Amino acid sequence: MELFYFMVFGALGAVVAALELSKNSKDRIITSPAFNSFKNNYLVVYSLMMAGDWLQGPYVYYLYSTYGFGKGEIGQLFIAGFGSSMLFGTIVGSLADKQGRRRACVTYCITYILSCITKHSPEYKVLMVGRVLGGIATSLLFSAFESWLVAEHNKRGFEQQWLSLTFSKAIFLGNGLVAILSGLFGNLLVDSLSLGPVAPFDAAACFLAIGMAIILSSWTENFGDPSENKDLLTQFRGAAVAIASDEKIALLGAIQSLFEGSMYTFVFLWTPALSPNDEEIPHGFIFATFMLASMLGSSLASRLMARSSPRVESYMQIVFVISSVSLLLPIVTNFLVAPSKVKGGSISFAGSLQLLGFCTFEACVGIFWPSIMKMRSQYIPEEARSTIMNFFRIPLNIFVCVVLYNVDAFPITVMFGMCSIFLLVASILQRRLMAISDKPKIENWTVMKDRDPEAEPLNE
Image 1 (spheres, rainbow, N blue to C red):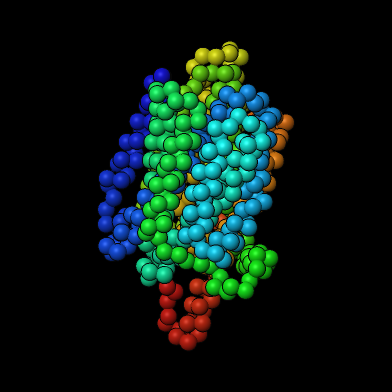
Image 2 (spheres, rainbow, N blue to C red; image 1 turned 45 degrees about the horizontal axis):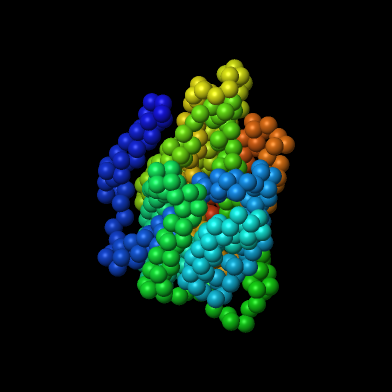
């Protein structure tokens, strides 16, 4: 493997280690032993859930291809997964609010385990059922666990600021360290031990079963809307009204959809971008490098959220601009660097530049996840949290399905340009969110000023 890859990985690892070891009192949040026990329990469960997800990711396409399916059939399977998440996501989110978030988390484990079991069958219809189950599970993963955490955190009376600590640690571990270890473990099962491409799915099912056992033995139940008389349609209507009547919620949903849509598009585009002429690139090692960059971002986020300034709404504007610029690199290098027409070989100079830009984007992803979780905990009403969060995923899944269906219709530079524009729009919407989130404070200070001419505005 080329020295360049090791240098990038080593540099990122050194920066992450330096950030973690150099944290001072201003970068740390002083918490209670009861909260630390609660946080560690959640982090163990979340890490196991993410391990069950990350183990599958690198081998889904490969497994389908070993069963003899072509690109078109595999594309249809992927579309089924995102389509299932779009169609059933809001329903399962509403059920989580009504029937209980703990029960929804257990349902996630069972559904994803069943999806893993279907991977043993080479039958297309069975695999399609597995993709539908996987789509439902994904909706639960990105709504039920966060909803349970926020509700349980508040129910136990912990400080609101401590939520940011759990969020940043969850992303650092679940979307960083666990992702890297899952990739290496999957590689060990498939390549080193020659257990076949279905082995990572069996391992994922085991991790999910362990996590489910911990949930059943240590988690308590919490709910959204306490009314037992509200049916699903009423819950949908209530969530839609909440989004339509509160500009902050609507902006947050748009920002999330724009960023995640660009992120999932990037997942499909980075391989052809780095190897346009079938250059030999170490996909697994590059994936691990991206996850290390994401860890760097989550480490930065934990520092930022531990302080009162800058606010999340403020620094995320900059993060979106940086992510937008980083995805412009494939377009810039296409104009400035003459493309090579030699097939095979090692990564090109343009590819090396793009890899650095993609690592920057992944660092922005690492900052985005805990930051968006923090904003959701502030702006989304508790009674319909899971329902609203899955409403946000509807435009995201529509966008990803359209991209998958037309992935060969546009040049790769056009796709990256589209993502860059989306991220720039997200930055503009984030600026608007910050402006309107400040309004109540300004209005409250104006009232105080009328009553007391010497009153000063409160600093966050």
